[in-house]
Image (spheres, rainbow, N blue to C red):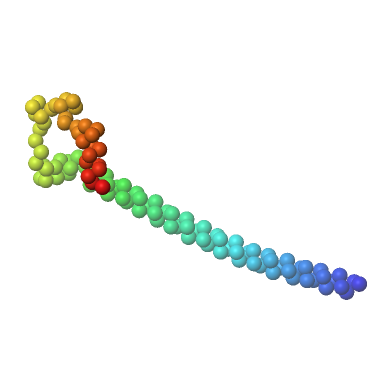
Length: 104
């Protein structure tokens, strides 16, 4: 009887050792994954800081003014160009319905 209980205890201890061994290496693997993810996150944060700095540099008012004067040919709004919203000829409900019906 003692021999059977001894064999059962040895088997239980061997199983526990095997399970602890597996858990140890699984934890190490997870730690490595967490460290890799943390490094990746830090690299992404650094990239975001670089993009924010580039955005701030490219949106300097003096640079935008220079580009606007170079590429835009707009003029100041005159009083004759300003109108009330009621003066805009919006289509009526039936005209809009007809336009939708003919588009289908």
